[in-house]
Image (cartoon, rainbow, N blue to C red; front, side, top):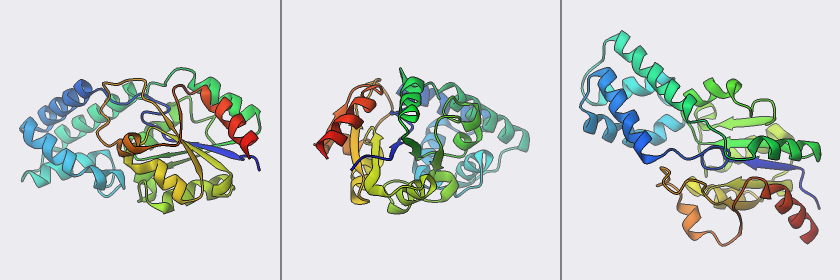
Amino acid sequence: MTYDAVIFDLFGTLVHNLPVKDYQRLMRDLSDAVGAPCQDFARVWGEKLDDRMVGKFGGVEGNIACVCETLGFLPDPTRLTEAARIRVEFSRRNLATRKNVVETLRSLRSLGCRVGLITDCTDEIPLLWPETPFADLIEHPVFSCSVGVKKPDPRIYRLACEGLGVAPQKCLYIGDGCSDELTGAVREGMEAALILPADPDGYDHLRGDARKWTGAAISNLEDVVELLGRKQEER
C-alpha cells in the first residue's frame, strides 16, 4: 500500500518555532499597548492558550480583550486595535519558512501526493495564510481556531483526512512533537514521523511527544520525500 497524502504540522515543522526572546518581546509590546502590567498580562495570556487555540474569543482583538477582562479592565478601543495590529504583524514576521519547505511541498505534489496541514494556532494565522507560500501548495489546511478543536483530539485528524479525501491509513503525518500530535495521529491510524527542531532555542515547552517518541525521525524537510519512499518500500 502506498501513501496518498502527507499532512504537516506548521510551527516547528514548516516554519521555525518562536524564539523565547521574541515571545517575551511580544508580551511587553502587547501589555504596553493595552496598558496592563507585563507580568500579569503574560500570565493570563498563557493561561488562556488552549481557549485561544480553539477560537473561543472571536478573533485577534477578542483574544486580547479576554486577557484584559480577566485582569479586570477593558482597554480603550483604539488601544485594543493597536494591540491586535502588533499581534498580527508579529505573527507575519514569524511565519518564516524552514529551509527547503517550498521545494519539498512541490516535490510531493509532483509525485501525485496530496498535501494537508493540521495546526494548533490562534486567529491571526488563518488571516495571514493567503500571504504565505503554503497557500498554493497545501490543498487542505485545518486551523484549530477555525474548527474549534486542537491536537490531539481525533476530530482534527479526521477533518484533515476528510478534506483531502483520503483514509487515515494512507496518510503520513510530519510534526515536531508538540501537543502529543504524533501519538494522536497514530491513534487515528496514520503513520507519523518526528521532525527535529532547526532552532533549539525555540519556544517549544509543549513538545511532549518529542521527548518520548521512538518512531521514525528526520532532521530536514527534504528528508520527507526519501522517508515517504522508504516507508512505501517497507509496505
